[in-house]
Length: 483
Ligand SMILES: Cc1cc2nc3c(=O)[nH]c(=O)nc-3n(C[C@H](O)[C@H](O)[C@H](O)COP(=O)(O)OP(=O)(O)OC[C@H]3O[C@@H](n4cnc5c(N)ncnc54)[C@H](O)[C@@H]3O)c2cc1C
View (cartoon, rainbow, N blue to C red):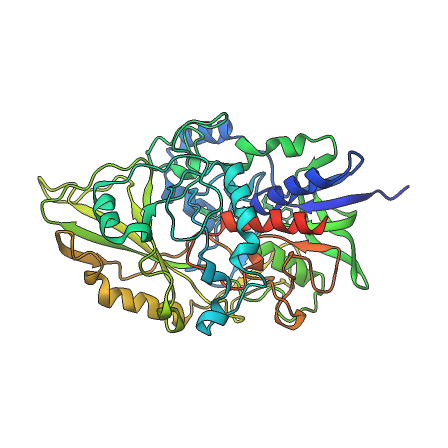
């Protein structure tokens, strides 16, 4: 039998893989042949909605269904869930759609503040790809932002709430309408955000998903999409990857490629590398994410109302600055999902904010292979860093000073941090030097020069901001500069 060798074997169909595929196809000749391996199935939005109606599926039920009964990996720490959707489009199906850019100093954390690590390139090197990813996702956002933008957001910003407007008057560009993939007005394929806060399964398809915007990539005649195909290792020879090993309906197979790109998220990217005997010192290490907690501000006589999306604003007041030498940066989200103050006549006199802190990847937190089952990675996570904790401690001690201009009569900050921010990062970090990472600035493996490891696994420093826009921009950049 003649062995078929594809020009590209691509693993996964979510942000990391789809944005890479988009740019790859723009550059590839009409004769190119691409095989995409997706472990899950196609669960269309319409089917998910019908199922949700039957199940009365709320966000908490949904998150617990993803975290408690997820048979795709073993977790040595049950209090630390890692949640994702292992099907076509991955977690683009269930994400909330928050898309602030990273700040310029996130890319040079070590050079500027002496902590963590630098990215191997600066903000300017990714900026055009931010613009392109924002165009594809039709991001809604404000005119003025704390980070430089060479192009305006494609859609107008969402409406602010009452408290947002007062806070913005004081903090200016450090407090903005949240940049988001929840459309502020209807586009060709998507409705306008309905503000019902059921974003994990948007009822009106206002939120960007791979299915509602990038499906045509997988219908390109050059592309074969194969479902139910779980990749577990790479077939390597010397410094080259020949192909990927995968199972389909219990049968082990190999797919061969001139180029291989894995975009299976940081849990599985790290696992595939480890299963393949990757000798990079950091393969699988540094599993991490941001750390978040909620605060409730009780208002005296001020009704908080309005806003046209579930999270109305992002605050950057505790984000960048000299404090990052000592403690983590924090991004603030003003939450507009339905909640009330439990006090007659004062139902709306409350503001709910989430404070999300960056963390520093720690090699003790890692994903490893299981001796019992090569298909199941094991996530070993101990705790977030002291650096992140100092950020949280500072917030607890100083939160009263944040909004002296609002009639705040009481502030409550949750005792507990949220179990997860639903971001999975850091098991194949980027570096200039092979001794300090797994992939180079184009996400190309330092040793296997025809292997790309896509997605948040490559983040050398995390930033407090949500990662998916940056994951998309990174994949565009990687394919643009490599083909
Ligand atoms: C409830 C929730 C809310 C979120 N909200 C936000 C938000 O507001 N903003 C934000 O920036 N981020 C958010 N995220 C995170 C965001 O969804 C992820 O950062 C993003 O999906 C990562 O994209 P990815 O392509 O790297 O991985 P994934 O989305 O995890 O996709 C991985 C893909 O690879 C496939 N795959 C996995 N393993 C294998 C294998 N072994 N073989 C073959 N295929 C495989 C999967 O089926 C999937 O198609 C949220 C996540 C969740 C769960």
